Image 1 (cartoon, rainbow, N blue to C red):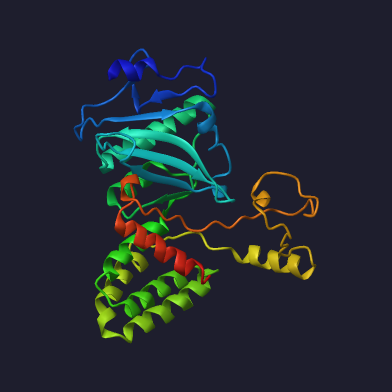
Image 2: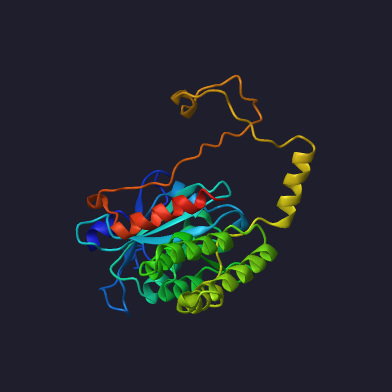
Length: 316
C-alpha cells in the first residue's frame, strides 16, 4: 500500500489531468506518508488532479464546499470522503477524494489540512473557504471548522436531505395527517426567501405544532436540534438586493419566463433553436430521482424520503 501511494505521489512535472496521491505529511524525500489506523496516527490518503484542485481558485463567497462520505466505492465498505464544490448555478464539481478508515474528528482534521497543503503547493495560494456543507456529525463539524478558516469563521451549512431524512425517521410512527403537517412546516421554513420571512414562518409552524399534543415531543426535538443548536444553518437565503434587482428587471420587461413551443425530445438535446432568443437561459426541470431496486444502493427509507421531497417541492 505504501509503495502504491508513493509511486503515484505529486510532482511538478505532472499533466493537469494526471491523478496523484497526497497526505498531510511528507517524508524527507517529499513522498506522502500515512498512519496505521490509530487515532494518534490515522490513515488518510487523498486522490486528486491539478485541474480538479484549480476549481477552488475562485472567490470563496461564490461557492459552497460539500463534504460527504460514501461506502459504496469498494467491496469492504471503507469510507471514501468526497469533497466537492457547488457553484452559484448549483452545479457540483468534484475537488478531491479521500480514503479514510474512520470518520473521527482527527481524520477530518488531517483530511482538511492535507487539502490545504496540496492546494498551496500546487497553486502557491492559500485555500479560502467561506461555507462548508455537511451532516449533523460532531466529528465532521469540529474537524472542518478547525482547518477551513478564511477571513472569518467558516459557516457550516446543513445538508437539507440529511435534515429531511432525520425528520422522516421521527415521523414514521405518526399518523399520516400529522406527518404531513410536520413535513409541510419543515419545507415552508426551508424555502423562506429571507431571514425575516424565516423567523415569521418558524413562529407560525411552531405554533401550529403546539396546537397538537401529539407533536410536543417532536417539536422539542426539532427546536433543540435544528433551530437552536449548532446545526441551524441551512441553504443560504436569497439576499434582499437580489430580490430587488430581479423585481426591477421584471418591471422593465427584461426578465420573464419564455416557454418554447417545441414539445419533442429534441428540446433536451444541445441543438440550436432559432425560436429561442439568444439572451435566454435554458432551464430544464427534472423530477426527483426514485430508485425502487434496493440492490443499486438505496434503502426503502431513503426512497420514502425522496418521495416526500418530490411531493413537497411541487408545492413551492
